Length: 248
Image (cartoon, rainbow, N blue to C red; front, side, top):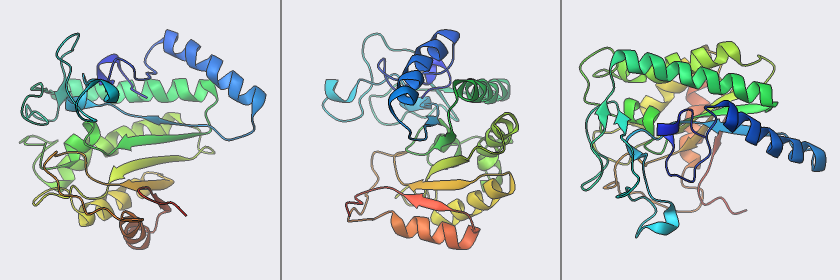
């Protein structure tokens, strides 16, 4: 669920950035509460340079940029996702601060709607991941270069959201544990990030991988991301979960 209109992946994606969004989603929540007893969570994110894409069934692949009715995209650096993709605008520090405020407002809306859990989306090559990964982050300021700097946006955003989200409600982060690219984000980086997130009050880390570089060579098999989850859980001492070909 995008925290601003330009952060949607496609024209068909859900958003929580306006009163209209909030009213529409309230009807969905009401139906769920009327007919079910399940806990309800929401994943908040921003697509960054992977925004302004076709719906998956409209292109030749699962991820393809819009040619018509597109919109400007933004990222850590002016580096497109792949050949033929829009070149994103490299965000200024002022724009970065404003983005964190959008995440905070969406968090407050999610609380008003009565969601039981939030997962901050920092994976799959979307905007927060674009800041984490040296593949997409070529900045030379406080938000680029060292691992500490590249983690800054995720940590600042999480901390600001945690401040306005009730302490009794769980709040976690989804990450791409590795980029599957030489010189990219690594499992050691993920452990370091998880330790910092735990210090800020993160309740869990949801482990996926890849998504920041279409040239990545991913070794896929049953439960292939479970070892990443296990290592982060063990070395950062934080609850984790994994996704990916888990069928039994």
